Length: 405
Image 1 (cartoon, rainbow, N blue to C red):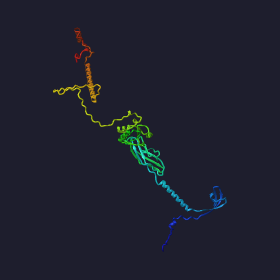
Image 2 (image 1 turned 135 degrees about the vertical axis):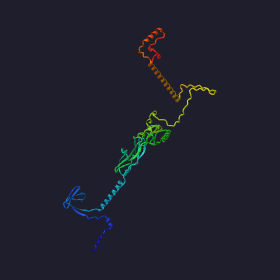
Image 3 (image 1 turned 90 degrees about the vertical axis):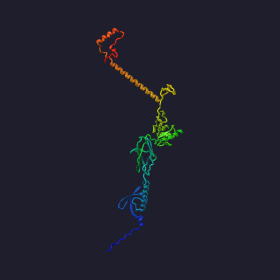
Image 4 (image 1 turned 180 degrees about the vertical axis):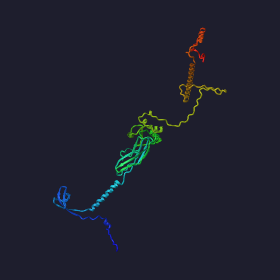
C-alpha cells in the first residue's frame, strides 16, 4: 500500500506582506432611552444600557428613537499608529540614549608651598542635566564647585609644606554618577621657588627690567594679568585695575624688594615686611653669600727693636708711640686683652700666696691665753728694772723666732 502524498500550497510573499483584509461591518440597532446635554443612554435588544456621546447621534433624536450603529476594525489606521509610535521611540533613543556624560579629566595647573591650583576640561553632559560637581581631597569631600558648567579651575590653600595630596572630581547627573581619576600632587619645599607666579603692577621701566631678571634667576614665572594661579602682585603704587583685582582675590601685594629677599635667602620669605606700607627697617635681609679668600697671617713688627751692628751698616730706629685716638687692629686688641688677662691672673696668684702666708703666721703664733711661768715673770721684771729704754715684750707681742715649737 503506497503512502499518501500531501501537497501544501502557500500564498505568494506579496500577499503575506499586504495588510489583512478588512472584516465585514457589524450593524447594531439601539433604542434611545434618555438624552441629556452630553450623554445619551441607549438600550440593546437584550436590555443592556450603553452610554453614548449625544454629539455623535443624529440631530432631532429623542427618547424612543432607534438608531443603527455600524462597527468595524480599521487595520490601516492601526498600522499607521504603530509606525508613528516606533518612530517616536527611535527619536527618543537617538536624543537621550545614544550618548552619555563623560567622566571629568583633572589636572594640576600650579603648586606652591601651601596651595594647589587645579583645572579640568569642560564637563561633557551629553543630553543629561548636571546635578553637582564635587571635589574630594584624600578621599574626603572638600566641597562643591560653584557653576560647574562654566567654572573650570579652583584653588586649594592652607596645605602643608612638602606634603602629598590626592584629588578627584565626582560628577552627578540625571544620567548617573561619574568620577575622575585620582590626581596626586606634592607641595613644594621652602627652597623651591618654581611655583611662584608674579604679576607686575605699576613699576618704572628700570625696576621692571630688574624684576624680570630676578624672577628668571630664582626660577619663578611672570604673568601679564592677575589670574587664579597668581601668588604675588609686585608693585610700588597701590592703584590700578590690576591692583584692585589682586586685592579682591586676596593676593599679597608686595614691593620688588620681596623678590630680592627670596633670592638672598635662597627660599621663600614672609610678605609682612614687604607690604607697600611696611617699615623697611624691620626687614632682615642677609648679605649675598660670596666665597671670601683665606686670610693671610699678619706679622706685627716688634714694639722696640734696635740693631747695633759691628760693621755699622744698620742703625737703631726708635719706635714711634701709637696715637691715643687711632683705632687698633683686631689682632693687636686681642693680644693686649690676653696680656691684661695674664697680668690679672698673676696678681690673683700673688694675693692667694700672701693670704696663705698670713694664715700660716696666725696659726704659728703662741697661745695668748696660756699663763707665763714664774721664771719668765722674774726675768721680765729684772729686765724692765735694768733697761727700761729697751722695751719689754709680752707673750702676745713675741716674734716668730721666740716661739718654741
